[in-house]
Image (cartoon, rainbow, N blue to C red; front, top):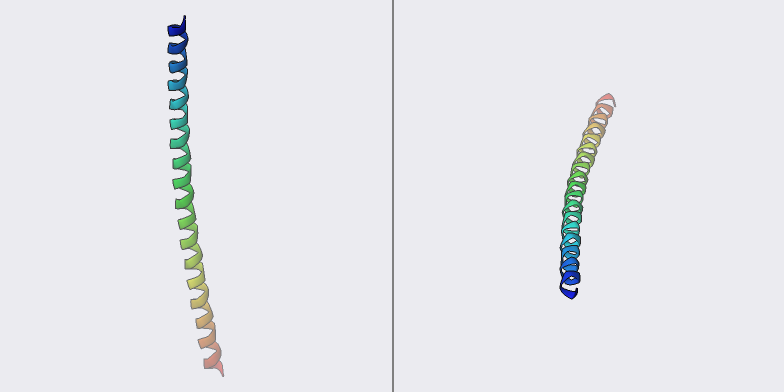
Length: 67
């Protein structure tokens, strides 16, 4: 009887361990995807800031030419 319970407990433990490993892999994937998205958004923000500065400079140059 004890051996059967022990075998069942080991089987349950192995199943739970596998579930935890799958959850960990999914979490890592989501974390990687989130970091990638964040980097992409940061790059878009930097591009927008550069574009804004370029437009500002063009307007300043045009304004000075009119003076």
